[in-house]
Length: 282
Ligand SMILES: [Zn+2]
Ligand SMILES: [Zn+2]
Image (cartoon, rainbow, N blue to C red; front, side):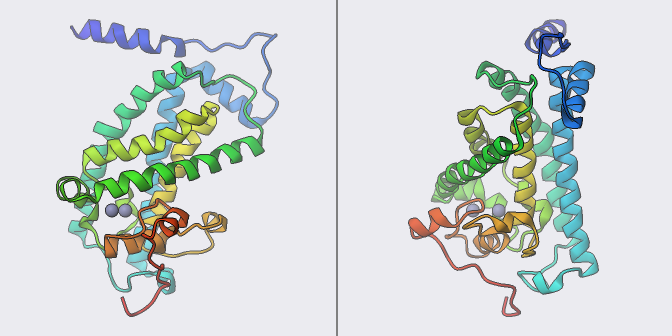
């Protein structure tokens, strides 16, 4: 039985086994393309997927850790949104337990399932990599598209049954901190994960954009849950970006600001509540 499953998995991913480049194929022309090709030739497409998955988990942890230090050593206190609301060690422990479970039992399997599916959709690993403008444009479309799908799923999760049984878990923390970005009931992780996959599957960008999109999405989620409204972060340059204060206010008030990061849909549909600048009244 185990041998059969191993055989099936091998069949599924065997296309990732060999990646050699012929003279007639496009050749790498810069450092990123050389590195991309080297990983493909050394570890195959599935190995590349695992490297991106681990990078995503690592950067998530790094982002969470940075804001943990902000709380612990009182950095950027003038930008803290909910003044003097710091997570206890039990809060952090509960959050990390949930994250480890979700990352291993939900996020990794979702990624593995999506891997052959994205190949079926015709997404490419091959050179040349997309030009910078195309990469940035696709990332922007993914940000906008995910925000749209997230808005509707999030509103759905705020209907009484789904809120009580699923989404309430994510709202356990009324003053979120960086690590809480993916703190959620496993069912929510699947459904909001679909909102992240959706724009990428519609656009079908190059795999480097696809993987980078997931990393960007995770980092943005860490930021919007950080509890700090630090305007230096480049996301704040995007028009209608509500960012941390916008989503922090959702955790505080529950029935407003359903978008992931942009305010335009909430404004259009009357669910927007003004983001609060850091204030001592909280
Ligand atoms: Zn949240
Ligand atoms: Zn919510």
